[in-house]
Every structure is written in C-alpha cells, then in structure tokens.
Length: 304
Length: 262
Image (cartoon, rainbow over all chains, first blue to last red; front, side, top):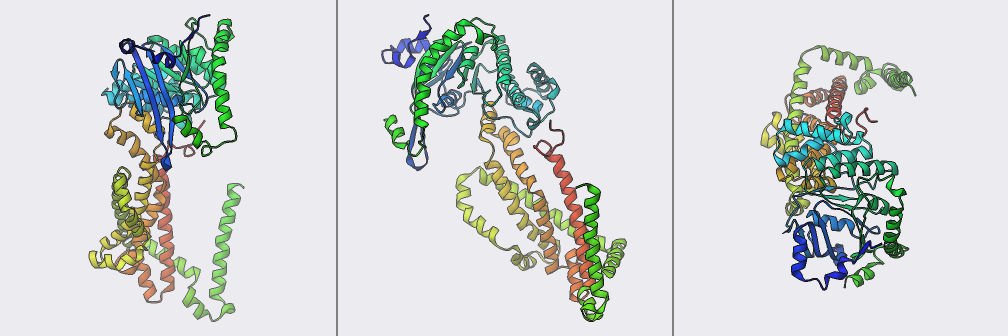
C-alpha cells in the first residue's frame, strides 16, 4: 500500500521556491518553515516547534497527532494568528497572515463559552461582530442549536449543561459564523469515550455539508484516522517537527464507531502507529523522572 | 438537623441571654440594683424603648438620613471603584506606578479621616458619604481589578476568534467578569458603606442613627444606647437580606447559585 508520503520537512530542502508558492496558492492554510520559540521567565527559551511545513487544501480534513506536549496546539495557534511565529510564514488562501485569522473558527479544548450567557446568547453573540440584526441572530442561533441537538437547552447556562452539551454549543458558536477554515484543538479531549464518538459523528455530519478546510489536533490516533483525509504525525518536543504525513483513503460518509472495525482502518492504523510509537516513547522517556528544570539543558541543547 | 429544632435552639439562646440579663440587672445578686441598671439597663427597658421608637416617627427620619448616606457612599464608591479598576487592570504601567500608593492608602485606618472630612465637607451628610466612599472604593476597586485580570484566557481567546473588537470584548467579556467579582463582594461593600455612615455620624453630626447613639451615650442613657444598637442591627439585617435577593437575581448563571442544575 502506497500510503506514506515523504515528510514535508525532508523534501523542503530541495523544493524549488516557485513550485512551493504555487502549491501554497491553492492551500487554505500553508505553514512554511515555521519556528516557534517561547521566552520563559528567567531568560530561558523554549523552542516548541521547528521547520514545520504543512499545507491544508480547501475542503481537506487534516488531523495532527503527536505525543503530549509536542506543540500541536502551538501549531494551531499560529494558524489562528493567536501567536506569531519566530520564523517562517503562515499563509491563508495564499495571503500572508498578520494578526488574527479572520477567516478561521477555533474550537478550544477547555471551556471557552462565556459562563454568564445562556447557550442561546453564547451562539448569538458570535454574529454580533458581523453586524447581524438581533432578530436574525436569534433565529439563526436557535436553528444552529437545534442542528447540534440542543433545541431544548437554549436557555441553559453553561454550568447547567454537560461537557458534551457545552461542546455542542461551542461547535454551533463556531459554525454559525460560517468560517472558511476550522481549527480544532483536542476539542473532545475532556469527554468520555461514548460522547466522543457521538460528537465525532456530529462533527463529520456538519463538516460534510460544505467541507471546509479543517485542522484537527488530537492525541487519539483512532479518532484522527476515523475523522480525517490526512494524518500528520509530529515528533516529540521540544523542537518538534513533522515526521510523517499519511493519506486516509477510507470512503465517506463514515460512521466513526463502525469504521474502526474495518480491515483498511487497521492497516492504516498499524502504519501510522509505527511512526507515532517512536515519538511517544521518546516523549515518555524524556518525561520520566525529570521535571522541567532538569530538562533545561536538554531544552537548550535541542534548540541549538 | 431539622428546621424546627434549629429554630427552637436559636430562640433558646436568646431567651437564656435575656433571662440572664434580666436577673443580673433586677436582683441584688451582683451588687446594687441601681448601679447595675445604670451600666447595663434592663432588657425590658431596652425592648420597650425600642418599641416606642419604632412606633414613633422620629427614628425613621434618622434612619432615612443613614440610609441616604449609605446608598450614596455605595453608589459613588462603586462607580469610582469600577472605573479605576478597569483603567488600572488594562494599563500595566499605571498599575505598577500607583501600586505602593494604593496599598498605603488602603492600609490607613479610615476613621482617622473622619475629622478631615468633617472639616472639608461640614457636619452634613457629605462628610459621612466621603468616609463610606473611602471604604467602598477600595473593595470594589480591588475586585474589579482582579475580575478584569482573571478573565479566563480561553474565553478571551475564543471571543477574539469570534471577531470581537475591543468594545465588544468589553461588553461581553471584561464587564460581566468584573461585575461578577464586584457582586461577590456586595455584602462586604454595602456593609462598609453603612459602617462609614454610622461612624461618621457618631463622630460629629446632627442626624442619623450614629448620632442617636452618641446622643444617648453623652447623657449616660444606657437604655438609649442599647436601643439604638438594636435598631441598627435590625436595619443591617434588612439591608443584608435585600443584598442577598439582588445577588441571587444577578448571579443566576453561576454554579451553585441556582437550583435548576441538572
């Protein structure tokens, strides 16, 4: 099976620039030569990710997997414009990104709803920056809440909703603005296994209606394969990079609970796990018995 | 423990207290009755005086003065606290420069300001409002400052990703967060507004509950002092339950504040 593509990083050195830029033009999101270094207290520097080249086409569902703390979320935040890369560029539909990415919606891992607003108001408020009238916003917010299965919960405050219901509200809040790019940072991480499957199917159902470019960060490889068109594997941090990039040629529409039982799924899983396992073990060995301070020289060493 | 039993026990404490007081001041067990009554009055005298005052009209005028001072101190102090809290929380340099001065002025016992305020604002209500203001301002200021500073970074990032501009962030994120912190200290700040008013009246005025107590004290009318204290306590409890009602209404979205949690 020809599933494995050469890692983007490896091909980068010999890439002809014109070829690279034309490739980037039809990408919804293109990260080129991305380095992100954090300046910590006490003058320490932490190089989170380095040499990242990643292009996501319009309509493509790409998952990013990697060991805990490898900088997956950092990558997503750079694509969202929430943080500025130390080197390299972020292009959105061929245009370099400066400031916040106005064409993207972001689904956070932690609770991001405004706790002082009801579900309805949380979704409605997303339309306010777009200048939608109150009556129209109300109508569309109710429609979206019904679409995510919360018709009966519009007047609940976030603390009165379960974790899965809160994610549904957040999903409606993001999608009601109809962003061209969807960024998701382990959105179903805090949920239990069954709720994750239900949310995964809901996400696929909503996404397949108009197929936006979607970057989905997760540490769950099965979830990544079941959902995406492509799975990108990141190495263990610090100074994490992309080590592998796989296509997932499973047919759509998919049911993420059932697709896990198919033979093709297992083959892909085995291939990707082969490269992911190495990184997970590396990350685990690094974390074992050492705290951050002791890791300092290791951090600095890896950054140079 | 059920409610009836609790209420019975609470009533028992009061009865025992009043009975002890009565025995001490009406029998010669603890010295001459005249002397003990001079220092401690008697429960019956205090209660009947209080009743007489509450059924009369004069006390309500004094209560009205105290209430006016309290409300003014609370409203002006809160408004200034909110304004400065926001400005300082959004401006790191300003906060850093003024930090030692704010801490120093908050450390000052406010009672020492009362004579100065009496000098500046006269013996009318405004010197009492000023005293209450200095107490309320700092509580509200620190809470609003904290509220703006401690907005969840995720909620803020999410709001920004939704495309909100500064004005919308203020309306939907910073403002509600700051108000939450302010409301959580509502009992304290209303209480301090009242303390400012009463202490100010006590130290120099011609009206209000603090004045009534001071007046009774200066003629050695212990019954009048105790009766004034009792009326003050009733007044405080009434204001406090009003605050609780307001709080319940405003913080309905908070976990633990609502009974509709599933």
